[in-house]
Length: 120
Image 1 (cartoon, helix red, strand yellow):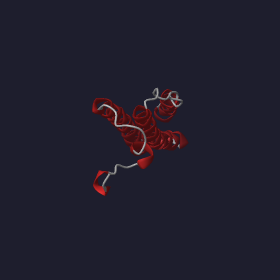
Image 2 (tube, rainbow, N blue to C red):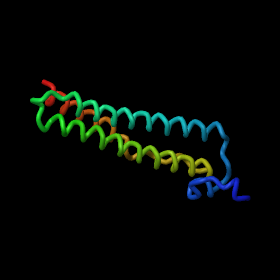
Image 3 (tube, rainbow, N blue to C red):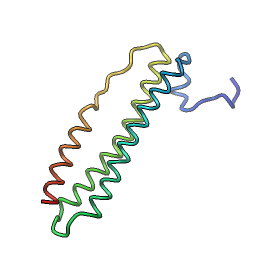
């Protein structure tokens, strides 16, 4: 393999055989959906910080922080999930389970409670 054909990250692409490209593209679309969700959380946090009423106090700041941190966490989780799924497909293994499935709903409940506290 020449240097122009080396794909990164090697710990993902350097393993196993090339899977059907349709599965790789589906995995990539899922990754991008997670990234869009993470960006929405970050934008929501910035918006909450800018739009929180003056009387919101700490609840507005905590809401903004939770949303931004949740967005950052989701982007990291998305990257790891993409890499683990891609590597499993390349090695002919079953797709890995998803241990972080509760992060998004728990984060949304927490954000909702903080939103209620900050704005009402």
